[in-house]
Image: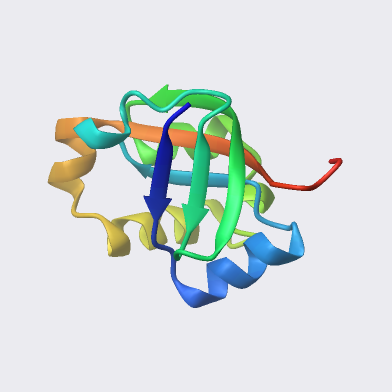
Amino acid sequence: MRVYHLRVREEYLDYIKSGEKRIEVRVAYPGLRGIQPGDKLIFNDSIPAVVTGVKRYETFRQVLREEPIKKIFPDEPSFERAVKRFHGMYPKWKENRYGVIAIRFKLLGEGR
């Protein structure tokens, strides 16, 4: 089991704490490529979770077509707004170079 420390924006941290956000989507940097179910996540050095599933995609659009947007962005933006959010966080060249990873998780201590 490996431990990954991930930083998220405060508004997303609140969604993680409330249980609304259950999928973290990132550019698949080399440091994240080995992540697998059973590994531990620590969000913003304070919220522990366990990885329950991992899936790789080529683009953010592909992720949003195959994963429930509500579990990624609980405020449920439109498909195009969700794509724009990702591109606001990550330059398109990084998406093209590394691909994308969707990490399903549950908070530690949860029965869900």
